[in-house]
Image (tube, rainbow, N blue to C red; front, side):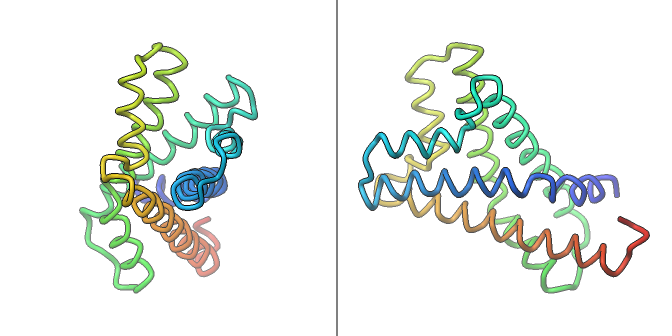
Length: 179
């Protein structure tokens, strides 16, 4: 029960930062792969993605709070997947998308966090950072498929956010005492 309350409470707080992160991450990968945007433009998009525009400390907070928040959502969501599911179509859809994307989102989030914090605090090697980015961006699938992987993650996370918010606010509307 505590997992559900935590999941339901923290989710709406993470929606805006996660939308910015997924939009900029997907835009960067797709625009670089399919449309060949210049590296300089790509770096500007990544500055938003990583929060670099807020400076070193702001970036670490941005990535840390967003990434750890998403990991917490994934862990509580995984715990909720083990419980009996609801019968509402919206909740069923949320659970299916969550189940399909659980491991890819976990891997992408964890490697993004490891890259940013490894770079800032542990002076990780370039080869290790390359491996982290290979997992983070889905490059392990090969050049033609990496953008599709990122697009799938972005659309999936967008679907989870939309269905989660709908369930959260539908519940708040129907049960005002449990806000």
